[in-house]
Length: 258
Ligand code: SF4
Image 1 (tube, rainbow, N blue to C red):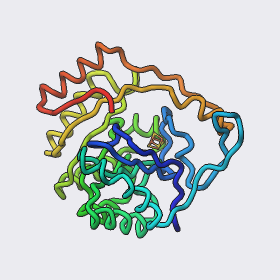
Image 2 (image 1 turned 180 degrees about the vertical axis):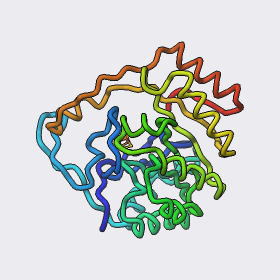
Image 3 (image 1 turned 45 degrees about the vertical axis):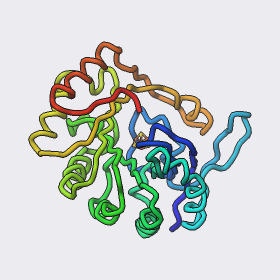
Image 4 (image 1 turned 120 degrees about the horizontal axis):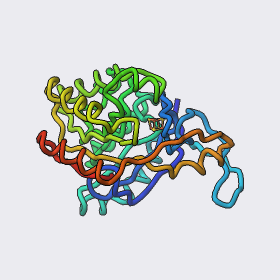
């Protein structure tokens, strides 16, 4: 089935290197309590109020040819900046993989760099299909403790860790993205646990981005006629810096923000 897309963002500078076009696929297999893109969660189109308060249907299908044309229009900017296309979501890797594989192969064939933004809760064979054509993975790791992961996302982190190993073993480039939330995943145990696991498993990481929680998605829940039950806070700047230093001392290249 042709996947649904809920946004195509041009001139994006936070979704991988350089200037990029980011394609947001609709549908996600998990439910993070802090999700700021609730319109990305369902796989089918749905009604959402826009900024003017008018209802509109979000979720549109594009052929591969149409998407390639939209992305290719800005190739000059990718070439100048080292950018390309980022496939995001929702979870792009749980879409129809025949479609995604063909799309990624086509970008690769015409020389447009491909970044995949993924939460890792994906059948491992899906990554194997696109690894040879993917330049970088933006890989979310939310919690190293599986029980806590289940509590906050609805599923264990078994696949997240398995797929991180798989990508590293296949020499895929990984930018690890850690969303950090006060009283959820920023205590010493949570942070040291990630570093210990990465090192024990010999996972090769290009860089790490530390992303403090924000609640910009609150209005979106209202616009979808859904209740927003989020009651989270971002960590203090001081704690963010401590975490950054901790990862740096462990030998990683770290940035705060996207
Ligand atoms: S993985 Fe991303 S899109 Fe899916 S529920 Fe979590 S925050 Fe939302």
